[in-house]
Image 1 (cartoon, rainbow, N blue to C red):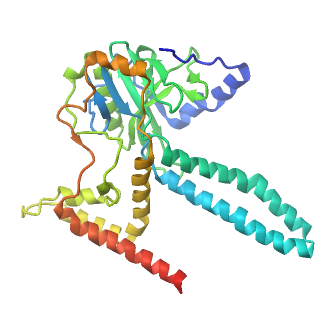
Image 2 (spheres, rainbow, N blue to C red):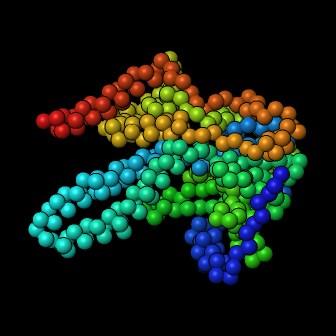
Image 3 (spheres, rainbow, N blue to C red):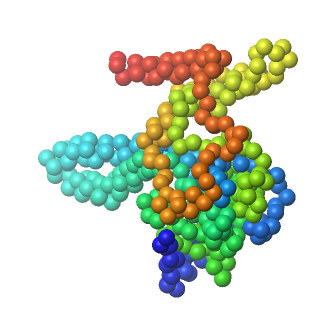
Length: 369
């Protein structure tokens, strides 16, 4: 297979990256903490739940967690595109029609300046976000080959980036949002560093592989890395079974899941008098009744995005490597994370969705009047 060579950068490009992106300052902001060598254990029990797509005796395929907010960013991009189109095709003609007869040349020049310098570039940016999120790929996959000691990172239409497992440095990353001083999102990265300790780049792509989705619990993130590490070092026979595996497509229940609130109704066994969890479900129901109208569009956007996205397809050479370990299948004993609607969830779905559509109807009545 033809591998992509790491592009050698000039002095200025190296200086800029060292001072900002993935250099010492950037790593300090991202709170990187080294986890030692990929051959050394972390002391954490491995956990592959909601991490693995497929695997066999020699190859493991997982996600990078790039699908965490799929559909939501695209919905924001679509909203921004519509606002820019309103400015370009409705506001601008109105300003021109008003300014030209009155010879308000300053207003006319200012409007054209805004169109060319602000609105048009913003429109292209928002449109790119929308198209990439809704018509891109379902996930940025990673493949681990324990025989060849290689990692392949899917990067879209170009050739996958090939990494040497034994040369990678695992780090635990923590990111604290700017609007929060409490919550820090944790993840584990596999980083390819140069002799100076800075991240290597493959063209414009940093040679960094993110394992699974981010979590507020650092041990949970490290347990996902430990699952991958033990697969590469000892093989699948030494790994614990996974409860769930990942899929590239969503089901209808994901639309009415309301960011996990519906799962509370599924877990409760109403036949047991001592069953707990009713109070939490009541609070979730009040939240969904009041804010379900705001949740539902994002759930619908996520469902549509997954349906429109393309499933990543590996080059034939990488697929041929995986044949050494037999057929690629989902983890043995794992269940799908995509669940179907059960009867005890139906009343909550009807209540929450009904309240959401009542709010939509109320909003619509203001425009009909």
